[in-house]
Image (cartoon, rainbow, N blue to C red; front, side, top):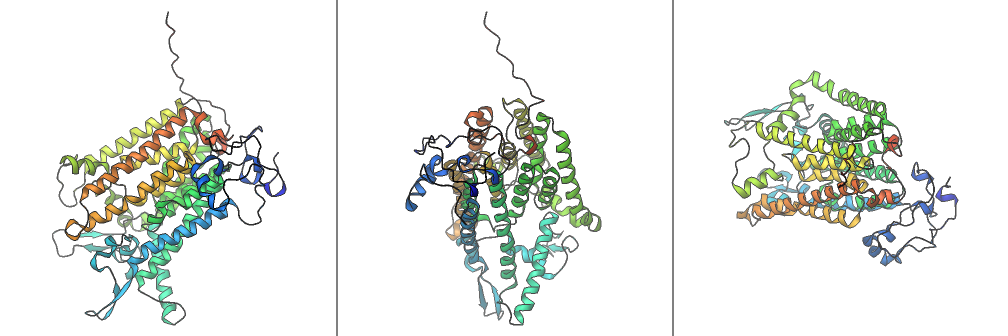
Amino acid sequence: MTEPADEVDDIADDTADPTGDGAVAPANTRPGNVSDTATLGPSDRVVPTWTEPIARAGSTPIGGPLGVHAVIGRHWFWTPLRVALLIALIGLAVGWFGKAACVQQYYNEDSKQLELDWRSNRPFTAMCYSDIIPLYSAEQLDKGGFPYQTSWYDDEGKPTQHQRWMEYPVLTGLFQWVNAKLTDGWLNIANAGWLPTGLAVTVFFDISAFWLALAWLVTIWAVTRTARRRPWDAALIAASPLVLVHAFTNFDTLATACAATAMLAWARKRPVLAGVLLGLGGAAKLYPLFLLGALLVLCLRADRMRVFYRAAGAAALTWAAVNLPIALLYPRGWWEFFYRNSLRGADPDSLYNVISQYTGWQGFDGPLAFDQMPTWLNAVTALLFLACCAGIAFMAMHAPMRPRVAQLGFLVVAAFLVTNKVWSPQYSLWLVPLAILAVPRWRLLLGWMTLDALVWAPRMMFYLGDDKKGLPIDWFLSFVVLRDLAVLGLCVLVVYEIYHPARDLVRMAGDDDPTGGVLDGAEDKVVLKRREPVPVA
């Protein structure tokens, strides 16, 4: 058994390849799998400055790549996790300053009061737009009502007048409500002179941003603990350009934290806890529940269905425990999230809108009246996603070696985003932790995340409008297509590595499936056999 890193004086294997030819160094030569990072010795860890050109180049200012005879894991404070968390704090601070331009205030001479300064289309020209800011008033959070109980009318007095309720899943709606109450408490104390004060919406944004930043730090912590031999991969999550742009665009880091900690719990063979966390994630955003599909087919292949049932049952009970009280007390308010999503047409960021804009196609349903449901669009997107899931399930049962949990999870979530009628820009955060665990190739991932983050600029300029010196829609749609192609390219790479596991960097380092839990090293029981070629007579 390898001793903990802080109790040994091992050095990196002399046979490793620090020259960066792409080989994983050093290779593990001991039998068995490492259960967690606490049992890793220095020779068990993947050194990014040996394997990743970006890390090797980035290390030049601090002395270059790690030496072959360097002592690893002996620093009293700086661990890969703490370095990643420090990078994340810097990135989150930059992200907050990027949104801060939209919570500035000014004194309105007409109304004789301080107001939010959104003059001159500031959210678009400064590219600081965040849903959190307008939702404070749009969802009536500033009025003090309870979400799902409180309703209001949009377009009041117009032919399009309609009744509205909180349109977010229960956990996200309650998160907003709690932050609104904390805002009221903060302002009450501030009025007594004990705390700095400001507009209520500014305080609401700052309180929400604090919890969202904490959720992203939890995401990084969980991925670092899950990655085993590759803890430095978490630094790529911390430095992701998508975090700089979208950490505070909406409330999606709540779901990424739930999904990442659920994967860690599953990796530590705690399926009930994993199910509880997936249920909480599904009550915040839908996508964490998709990971159950990946676990289903992998458990079926390894004959670990009893473990899957425990996780799925815990997820269902947790989701129900969060949702049922609201659904029973305020059924119409609870249903608003599902109703509003069914009414939505093709989002500007979707491939359906790209096709429509470039071809003049009017969509599967044709022109729609106000509040008319796009029935055919909903059906097509659902069928396409289910078809992708069926293909992923077939591949999982047919591949020569059981795919890793992160690989299938990434494919399922990517399939949902590509086929869905809505791909809000912050949804790309869902893919970041999964991508790091599924295909930890730094240059490719950094290229995709940079391109994905850059979609924000032409999007804001498109919403600004041509008449206000914005950009035409073609720029925005071109970046959308490039982003989708980049994600599809990653999917192709994941599929290739599933069918060619010898090219999988995680398995090259000596692991079977760090996220697999009970699946890690498990024997295949149910496999779709390949048809053997018929010999030519």
